[in-house]
Image (tube, rainbow over all chains, first blue to last red; front, side, top):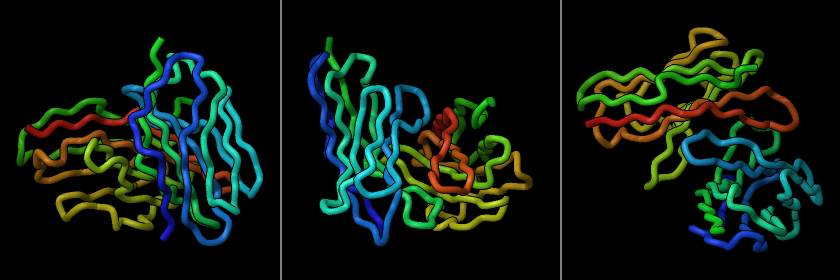
Length: 112
Length: 114
């Protein structure tokens, strides 16, 4: 079945550092790919998405590119802030499916 | 729009008691999902509905768990009897069928079973 594998955390960086959180997936056909973010004490919220190969999703300085050849959707940000501290989830929805398959989440802490 | 609404936000109960969690999806959304989040197991999909009909309940851990959606604007997740291992944060999410499949999550209910 479909699955998502994320870089294990926790990840701790200093403010203004470059961030990469790796995500790879296994799915048949052409899934849609998502990054969700969960701030402390809150529910998940969509950060960015990409629905077809080579699409780049972007939001709040974060970017991720749908790479079908490597089945990857790595999350990047050029300069992180303390306010980016949260848990990040990579997810996919199979072609024609409404259900999301989530990775295990990566906890990110940014120190001032 | 108010977003997905869940109640209560926190629930503390004793083992053996019945617990009912409530969810109001975003108006117009036709899918509703119940998730459970724990440190040990991460985020788990329990059950989801389409147009008030349960589609996949394979994630429901056991018969003590049941979920209903009597109408498009309300769903419940019930645990009877509750056990300490049910302690978790339970999220409800809703979505509208279409290209993006984006799910909108509620703030969650933190359940503690003593």
